[in-house]
Length: 432
Image (cartoon, rainbow, N blue to C red; front, side, top):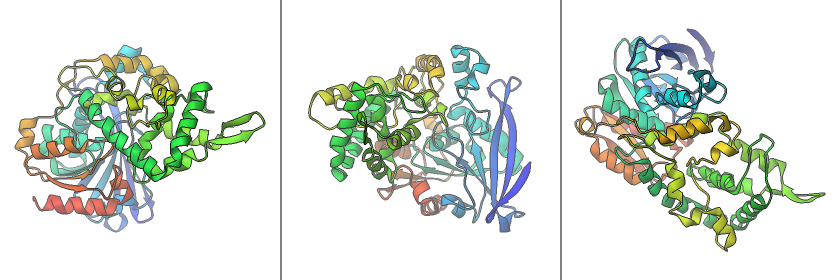
């Protein structure tokens, strides 16, 4: 272990080995990385542990500097573990560079089938005794991290002192089709709210999409920007300042050149940064698999369900007069053609989309008998996680207390972390 300092905190790097398949503990093992953070003045204190599970899938734990965001509040009473979930960050990363070591697309897909919430929870249970001496810990789950926390309550509640969830209460039984059928109307509301705020963006978005339909556009990074790819910038609308950031990106789209109007370098750079999966490819590869259970395939649910909502069809929009509707965080087959970080993984993604042997993630009976204090922030009209799905799940988990708020968007714990965490801790303690 290596320890070092940042302002006001002591950091310690931890590395663990765990089975790739927890059902075969004597088989292949992979490495997990986690960063311990403790307040400098409490470095030697006997503190309870809080483990943070990042949103995603596919993102390593946030790299904080000092006591940023919610971390400062947590450090008042916890020793915090920032876990890079398997396949992310420094935990045996899985991407276009490393996955060919597994073999072909079939072997890669079989490998990645072990990278969902069920395996992440078993990872946590494997490393918890090494850190806490066997004592239970508190879990803070953001977005997909909340999905993992809900699985934790289903599978290993004995390891939990309390659970705090922000924007991440999943449906216990919705199929991927049902998830996206609920999502597209929410996305439409976010788009309409954006255009109401910035009506000038209606013409700008149509003009950009029309340009892309007429001109093959490859960004300097190698990303092929099609009208559909441009629409996926709507994923920004789920964040607190996302509408404003999208507006600033659109207003800078065109520049006059010697050859006529062209997409500006600044716009192309901003789009490339917003759309690239290079830093988190598992988000695309496993995105629909996080909903899969009950021995059924996802079969590119977001793409199939989109056909039920004609307003999201760019070709039809450009042939008419209406506004272009952006899409949200959905992943589509064309992502694996557009993004150079995903192109080598196209067949792997196809194999996972066709996979049917997915186990159940949640145990409704066990959740109904839950005895662990649980508090969840549910964001009103959250673009990424359906509010009705979350509230139905909340009713199915015994003792869970919700804070339903429209003060924040999906990234509330990032935007105003100390207040959100303080509220959830107070709610959970009412149940202790």
